[in-house]
Length: 171
Image 1: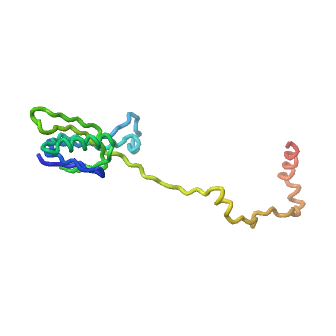
Image 2: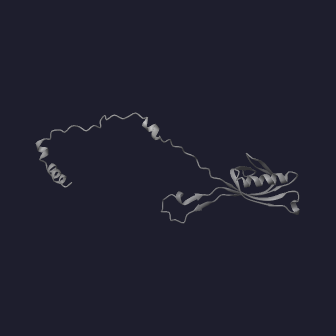
């Protein structure tokens, strides 16, 4: 049994004894059928890591450390735990403390830490109307309608031209 720490920007809690740690890695698997040869990636979702700790706070600063630990939980503070299993970006999911005859000068703690998922931010630049109107005006190069051209007699008497003449009258 050795000491462990939970720390963040608000401070540090030093556990006098870490009795046990239980690291939990789990996934959610859908009940949907997967075709032979297909990837199962869409059917499995990896859950955030969890760490259950049983630890003790003792001595003259036990009450201060216990209060700080409760503040971490209350404020949803993102922390790092260091002991045999080091895990960062965690929050306290559950905190249970016992004070009895076996540890009358301190607390026995059962803590569940859960790793948080962090989303990455992607920014996209969009031109506003004011900026868009400042853009250079386009010229009509290559997009102008050409003047009517003379049509060859053979072409004008083709079946396609006759069909066009009939259909154009419908509209």
